[in-house]
Length: 419
Image (cartoon, rainbow, N blue to C red; front, side, top):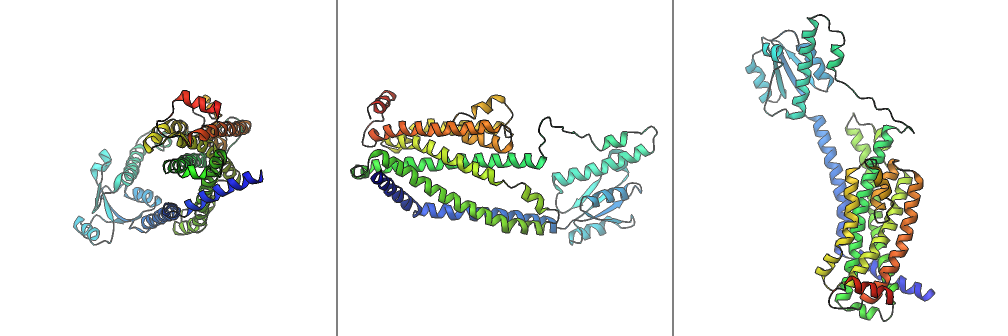
């Protein structure tokens, strides 16, 4: 047992050291945090620019009836409104806009009272969101003015504010913050698991294929048994993946500690307490780690077997398609049920070990399934890891020294029986 451990450790260390020294590993490990920092910095910059941009508007009311109310409502949305008298010419307002004293000005006239139409004069278009906001303010103000001139208007003003839906949850009470945080964490976790298992599993396949194609394995196999070689490769790539993910997680935490308070300080409306409520808890992170480890061993065993079966890159790309479908199918299903409760049968499909990381993790953190189902999925995955490793090991033992045409399913079955 001690000799076996030394052999596995030797392969593990070789795989780990060789991969963490590559330019691709170093570049990707550094580039992802920098990209995250750049995105946060860009978001903060855009938010600050949005807050600091000119929001001064002028309003000229030729109707003499709705100008003050429109100005009050627009100021409530964050604009600095200046009501100018009708004696001020439009040419003067145009000059102020062109010289940057104000961003734009709004003209209300008789057509506003008749049809709700008004003019917005500026160098730049107001955009759809700002335009829709101003349209709703003007129309509501005009409608209220008309209603005030008629009788039997009880209840009509309330309807102008729009209907609203009151959601009443049956069963265990869950706050809206917890629900949104669970959905966001589940979706992000499923995305991380999908990318990580696909990326690091393909690393195992490429490592096996390269050694087999370069005939290096024929030398290595003389001192290490095929099973220990496969296990060492999987553990080596897994440790490399954990190192990379750990660095990214540490950088994300550091960016969050430094960036979120800075963002909140520059955006007065942002509440730091509300932002932190949406962050995942320790339990969700531990569960994500467990699903990653089990899912990695599950899929890496399959990728190692595919690498041992094939002799060329083209054959490996074709042979790994079924494995990729085992990742793509649950990911696509999860896209149709972000809250985990769109179809009842998906909860049971999430118990399938190859689907569990991507389907069950989002359901677990969002509270969409019972915890006994989460525990059952982990037990099934442990059993599947053992069974898959056994089958993949027997294929690897024979296929690692085979050259030539890719084996058929009947030949694979014979390898498993006779290995």
